Amino acid sequence: MAAVMKPTSPQDEQVALKAEVRNFNFYYGTYHALKAISMPIHERRVTALIGPSGCGKSTLLRSFNRMHDLYPGNRYEGEIRLFPDNTNLLSPSVDPIEVRMRISMVFQKPNPFPKSIFENVAYGLRVRGERNKRRLEERVEQALRDAALWDEAKDRLDDLAFNLSGGQQQRLCIARALATDPEILLFDEPTSALDPIATASIEELVSDLKHRVTILIVTHNMQQAARVSDYTAYMYLGELVEFDVTDTIFIKPKRKETEDYITGRFG
Amino acid sequence: MAAVTHEQNLAALRALIANHKRKDVAFGVVGLCCMMVGVVTLVVLFIDLLIDGHGRFTWNFFTSFPSRRAEQAGILSALVGTFLVMLVTMVAAVPLGVAAGIYLEEYARKNWVTDLIEVNVTNLAGVPSIVYGLLALGLFVYMLGFGQSILSAGLTLALLILPVIIVATRESIRAIPSAIREAAYAVGATKWQVTSDHVLPYSIGGIMTGVIIGLARAIGETAPIITIGALTFIAFLPPAPLSTQPPFISFEWLMSPFTVLPIQMFNWVSRPDPAFHYNAAATGVVIIVLTLAMNGLAIWLRYRIRQRIKW
Image (cartoon, rainbow over all chains, first blue to last red; front, side, top):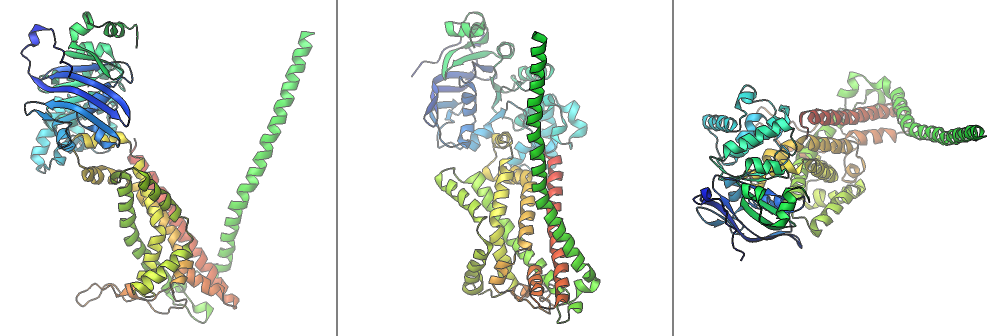
């Protein structure tokens, strides 16, 4: 098994691990999409996955909440250990529903339900059986505040979510993901469908949220990775080329391939 | 010299375009004629029925039983029969069809077995209705002992429109983007939570459209109903479903003999006395209006729901 690459920045020596990918292989049918990936996920830090289209970064992200289980023919091999309980969340004996209750996800395009703003945020709680109206209201408000949407949405909680702008819809999706107090928050290119101003507000949100939740973000935008993340993993053709502290990746990467990609000579 | 060539070229180009445009016009005319054959025939047919039948559109026509005297005969029993048969059809076919459609789309594994089932369901929609009538005669009328009743007829038509409802259900479920489904799964929902909280509410418009179109087809069906033995002359109504004595609700009407509008119409058409033909024409108008109204409702529903839910 490949050794986990250690980050080089001294200030991060004491950061606990929230999860660890260990020799992880993934197959779409017979297609070997991810090859022997090993990397740590640090607690309450932002880890960015970057790389050219088709490198497997979204595939890796979607393994963290077992999204691939929804479609036939997909196969996991290896482990993603979740701490502190040391559960291998890829194990067939672990229910994907349990994994998704612990790890939330925000998707590429805003995908609110065609329901009211309130119901969108409350849905995760309802799925968990919460019926108490006051508790629902409290937690929906808290989630909307955390997603920096409360001021814009508080007077129109019963409006259809579709009436919000694209950036607001994405923050609504973040609120939906936050309402259930996840241990890890996954972002799959969350700003690729948004304009620059909405993108800036989402990035700001990611930086704020990392103080309470571990974040894993896929982005095709290298500046974004540099701005918001503490650690960066560069992937290419299903392999993890380099993982390190973001500054190191962007200033003096160890591998030539990484440097070529970062400097725009390729990709 | 060059200018002449240029003008000649231009003239040749214009001649070419004019020539091509003649084909445009030619198809326009042919297409218009083809469309007219379809539409005009239908309109003429409807107007012809109206002319023949308009004299019979009196209150009495809708509140009288059939009679030996044409001018006193009405469609009350057929109208009530059609309504009750449709009720049974709907109650039987909607839950079965919707549940089957949801199962095939959301629960069943996608493999060659489901592919085979899919092809067969689509084929079932094309089976001639008389075949369903024969099947129902054996199954409902004799084997299950329902007799020549409203129940038998309703179940027969339910079988007939089941494929329509299954296909409509699957299609409107497929129209839901996978991103919405994934969003629900991503917060930890189970299959059933995704189905009942999202899939069903978002596809209900399309499902209802399919149900109504299926019922509109069933309302005009004659062959299978004749096969299972509907009476052509009924001068009484089925027992009332509600009564003043306990247990207040009765299902005796399910076992009652009955007739339906198309059979009543068929019966009158086959009489030698032309006075009955006016009755038949009027009945035809009623059937067409009912069918058009149902299809109109389906279109309106689809439009309404499309406005509310956009992806």
